[in-house]
Image 1 (cartoon, rainbow, N blue to C red):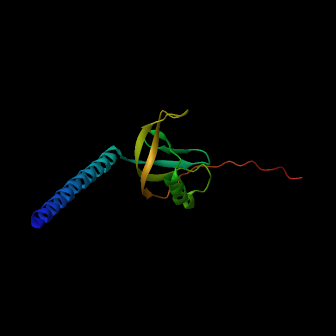
Image 2 (image 1 turned 30 degrees about the vertical axis):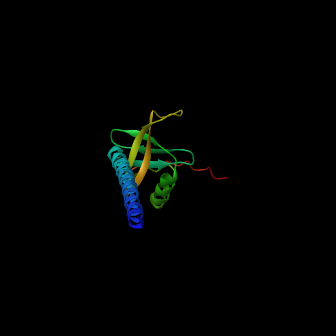
Image 3 (image 1 turned 120 degrees about the horizontal axis):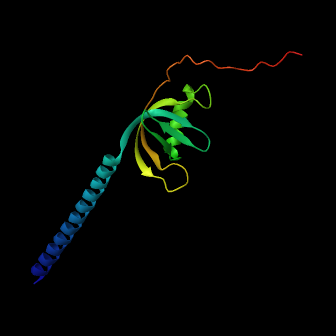
Length: 137
């Protein structure tokens, strides 16, 4: 009788353990598929980045997006800072991000940066800056 009782307890413990293992495996599969879906939605974008105190923009050859101000934008702004000579300099970058509809006022779509792939030095251009001279007294 004791052997049967012990055998039933062991058998029920094994069944319970197997059920939990299956649930964990299913949860892991769902998590992996969610990560895969997230990666599929991301795009690699190459353009010029401009960051101001209250706004950020990524301008490419055939697009321009407002950028969601979050921790990734702050990291990117720190990486482009050494290349900026002026507050309005646009620095070439390559980022991975998700383009989302904007629910707020302003841009129709905004870019949420997920990963910073590259920051490069801007090309030197032959721009002429005009400065007004103060008359001598």
